[in-house]
Length: 199
Image 1 (cartoon, rainbow, N blue to C red):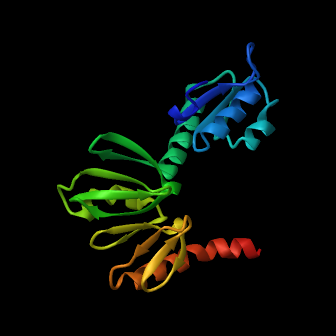
Image 2 (tube, rainbow, N blue to C red; image 1 turned 30 degrees about the horizontal axis):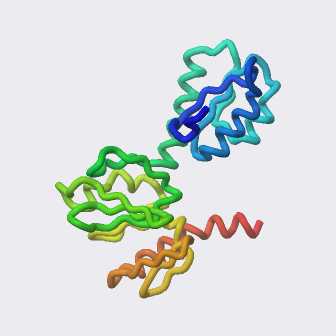
Image 3 (cartoon, rainbow, N blue to C red; image 1 turned 60 degrees about the vertical axis):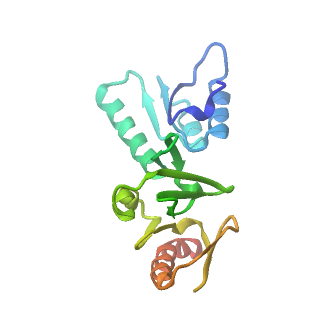
């Protein structure tokens, strides 16, 4: 209970003897908002509660292997969408994609710029920037601007020909010719969201 932020997935039985399972689930969610919670229970009693805490699956007992496999597949797919793992000079580092602003090359490494002025350097580049970071580009919010810039479209607040202003007010000055590519993709990327807000 003292390590709420240490885990990606929690299997949680809510009928506990020594503590309130619902309160524990709320504590986990408050301390680790990106964690996946799989609720285990013998009936439907806590199903509505599981929606409130955004659990990824509600496993009814008795648990079969196929149900467990389904729950894990859903949990892993949601984790993959939210996070990435990078190999830094200090070891492996988990990055939450919501916190990522952009990636560029600094000190012959990929430099990951996050909110709150946090940066991580990957190990020295052994291939091109694009090849080294290609695994990130299956996330639709990450856009590659060749040769050596990846921006998070979700965190762009203002875009003009000179610079990007991110949602946390950090500024990135753009290389020449980058604006047209970013603008065309960014405006199209946000269009469905704007439509949802209108309707």
